[in-house]
Amino acid sequence: MSKERARRRAEREAVAAREKAVAARRRRRREALRRLKPTLPRRRRTGTLLARRSRVERTGIVALTVVAVAAAWFLVDPLGLRLVLIVLLVLVLPAFVVIALGRRT
Image (tube, rainbow, N blue to C red; front, side, top):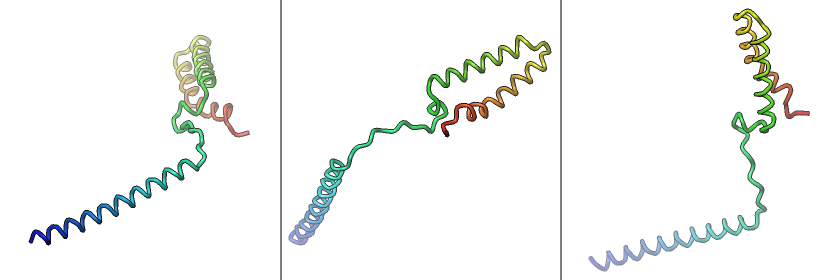
């Protein structure tokens, strides 16, 4: 009985040693390939809304929007018309930004 257990344990250890050797070989191969492959600089993610525009562009967008809202507020008398102009500005602003600051040339 104990000889049988010893034989099974030896088989398990041999299989584990082979798997460990294979994993080590794969790890060494991966590391060697990583050393050979040229590294590229990390790209900035452009998936977020704010990262698509530079800080200057974002500042300009906000500043012009504030100026347009202030102009609508101070130069137009009826309150309803003021609110309509501000809502219209908010709705048209994204299209204006895409057209005016589009990256395509």
